[in-house]
Image (tube, rainbow, N blue to C red):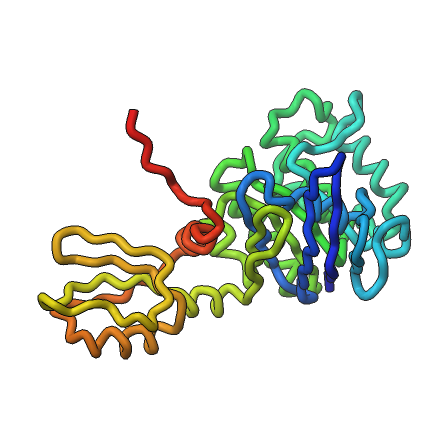
Length: 297
C-alpha cells in the first residue's frame, strides 16, 4: 500500500504539493490524473524516494521510503524520460539491474523476450523513444517489483505494444498482487485498466475514488422541459448548455436520484448518458477554473 499523508513540498517559494494525501490500495491499478503542473511528477518522485517532503509522510507498506533501501528494492519506476547508461545495450542494462536488484529474475527476462522483440545487443541510445520505453518495461517487469510506479508509461508506443504492456501489467496485478501507480494524460486508456482514480490540481487532491463509484456519482442528462418549467434548485449542476429546447446538464449525484428529481418537472424528453473518465476530469476541474475557453480570433 502507498500512503501519502499531508505532504507539502516547496521549490524556491513555490508550493508544488499542498497538504496532499493519497492512498493506493495493495494490488490496485491507481490512475493519478491532473493538468500540467498539478504536481503529479513531484509526488511520484517522493513515492520513489527521489525527493524528500518538507512536511508529512510518504509510506510504502507502512514504512518511510526516503533513504530506505529495504523498501526501495520492491519498487520499480519508469519515468517519462527513460534512464540508461550512454554506451549500454539492453543486455548491459539487464546485467546492471541484476546486480543491484535482488528480486531481478533472468528467467522472467528471457520469457518476456518474445513480447518485446528487441535486439538486446543494440545500444539503448540507438533505439527510438518507443523502443527505449519497451526496453524499460522489459527490464522493470523483470525486477518482479511489489510496487510499480509509471509516469506517462505508454507514450511513444504503437497501439499493439500499448495493449501488450497493459496485458503484462494486469496479469502481474492479478497473479502477484502488484500495486501499480500510473500517471498519464491518456484518460481513455486509464479508464480501461484502472480501478482507482485520484484527480490532482495545484498540488492538492480534488478527489480520490474507486473508478466505478466515481462514474456512478456523476451523470450527463439531456432533456427538454415544458414551457414554464425550470430545473430543481436542489440539483448539483456542474455544467449546463442549451441548444433550442434541448438542455444538457452535468450533475453530481446518483442517476436514479437525479432522474427522480427531474421527473417532477414533467420533462417532454429525458435521457441519461454515462460519462467517460475524460469528461469527469474536465467537469470536476471546471470548478477550479480549468475548462476549454472560447476564443474569438
